[in-house]
Amino acid sequence: MCVSHNEGFDCEVAIVGAGMVGGALGCALGQQGFNVALVELREPEAWSRDKVDQRVSALTRASQHILESLGVWDRMSEMRVSPYRGMSVWDATGSGSIEFDAADIGEPDLGHIVENRVTQLALWERLAEIDGVSRFCPESVSRMELGGERPWLELSGGKRIEADLIVAADGANSTVRELAGIACSGWQYDQHALVATVYPEKHHQEIARQRFMPTGPLALLPIEDGSCSIVWSTLPDHADFLLGLDGPGFCRELEMASQRVLGGIESAGPRTAFPLGLRHADHYVSEGVALIGDAAHGIHPLAGQGVNLGFLDAAVLVDVLQNAKVGGRPLGSYATLRRYERGRKGNNLEMLALMDLFKRVFSNRNKVLTALRNLGLNLADASGPLKRILARRAMGLSGDLPSLAVAPAGAYEIGKECSSSSHNYPRR
Image 1 (cartoon, rainbow, N blue to C red):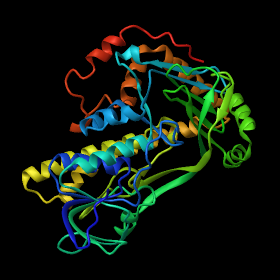
Image 2 (image 1 turned 90 degrees about the vertical axis):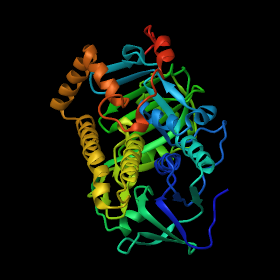
Image 3 (image 1 turned 120 degrees about the horizontal axis):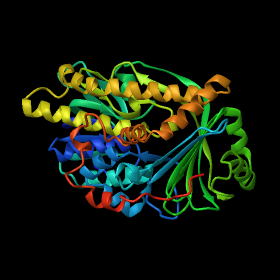
């Protein structure tokens, strides 16, 4: 059950939004002994093994480490996490392709496909177990004040929360970001992403597949029961056409688009589509407030990096706040929060720019770019060292990592032993 307070509430950190990223931040701060208030509009849906959610995320190893550190990964595994041990990417307009195998870098897998509801529900349950974390639900923010002695929120139900720091984890259309007066820049792409769960004739063999077409990429992401979650980025009119088809008609279109890589598509679940764009907040922080996750940035889903960036935002902010608390510095001061912004803004901008470049290079019919991208894919595939670098970076295993994202010593020794021989999975 959520906590309800009829009077004012005082805490160190108030987090608005208890989705995946906000929930992770709440768990992490609670575990570190912070007094946390978490404001959420609705509880996660109850879990059902018979239903695969339409919205999934490809969680990197760094994200897995964070979730393990928060004590939720085992609970997620009880529900459903689906490892992918290989990845196959190819260009629809040429012969370019690249294949990745976890065994080549001594890892048990390249990551996990996890339904968003699984992650959110596991975090929500964990929040209820942590002393010092109070959940306000169902609630939303109606007013915010940052200019007084301490920041405070007024909730839709009339409650007032005072905090040293307010964190916006309330998504792309963040109310907190708007009330803080932080502008957001970006643009819409000429694409919608259609998502659904489909049941192919052949087993996916725990391989994630992505075909780049001029109208946008089609990703087939493996689920442990043999189904695939698809993310089909395409022109808006084409997305509308696909949504309007009956089940067999949609399956036939998907078979053609996927080049029958998994044979026929026997059935498909409900479909939905949403517009795609790039979005980035001009600032991540101001006095008394910080933005994380989708409140700070939005990215094309072609590499599945959106929530992984958000988890790293949360983990870096935890390190910054913990260091400030130990050092006796104010949690919500601009000087403190700038350490968080410097730690994340550059990395996020780099990833946003890279995904924007990928979208523009692969989603077009220019003959010169087609030849260059096919050549690039084939050269990268032929270079073992380059592929290993690309794979480890995509998994979040390189560069400076926040404390929560670092694996405990020896965490994967058993898995690495199991992965020491090459998998001979059929690719396409």
